[in-house]
Image (cartoon, rainbow, N blue to C red):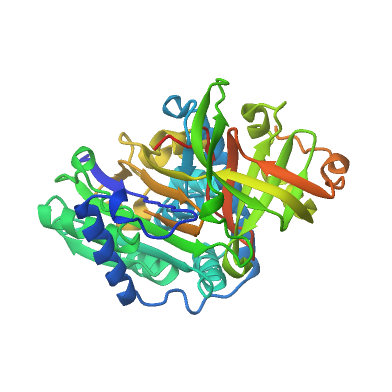
Length: 443
């Protein structure tokens, strides 16, 4: 039996809290690409205009958060991630895998259903459509957000019309056809990525992941988000000062620390941590930062980073007067393969090269498809102005009495040591991006 590769590329990017780069921050080529992508964004039509905020979409939003935390747990255990900053878009990855799920069969389908949290759901496609639309429609009036899906089909592929129709209708996927292992296709794919991440991720196809003669499909999801802080929550550049950031090793580095005095924030404090929500424009989305107390290690706090506790923490946050908010400026890029992480989460069969019988819904077995690679690329930037983002992929409940205790009348939140964070919409509380900062100087 001939083995044919299905190449899945899931690409994500986030720039949080940021205006456009100044000329001194990038080279001319990057500036040109960013400007071209900025002009191209005007041609991107509104998407998911018929979406509704259904019960199915709400349940899928919850499952997206479960997926996010499961992925975070596996990612932090990867050898390459030890002691490093982490950043990814669970929403983008969940959506890209949703496009793949439409075509999965046999054990591959049951495994992926469990990973995505969609077991027993009757109308998965409609749920994905409505969730994507619910997020976009809630945020888009107040921020620049774009969610785009694409499918490249090889001229040698035997892709079923039913599969193409499903991803077009449920994910509004753009479909392209051609010779995938050609320079022209590589350029077209990278141009699409550059356009749909507003130039923040210029390429996804590079020397180490070039399509070959056996590549039959390339799936892409791009998520872009950019917003300013809500009125009254801006950080003044004049208040940004160099300060110490203490690493896990207890060594200190000098970082640019943004400071804001006063104001009211949704806030929670326990014996082990502080949690704050900093809102973006019109409160359509928020940056949530979870900071361990000086007496609590980040790994210990990560162990309590569960869906149950996140739900509890969010529900017990209270609008509280702040004395001082201090967070570091951050700019970083990440790029990692997600194959092993997804396998560790339980999605193994779709990668099977020995018995590639788990993607029959895509081509009915004509090409013996399997997933070759899942690639995740991200960009993050946090500064005084706002946020920008784009992307191209036994739990113990805390004591409710302790979590719900009243925070102090005024609090200070000084993120001068490693912390976790996520960005979510304020409607369905869907996690769009998440990660941790171990060292704000790490690029």
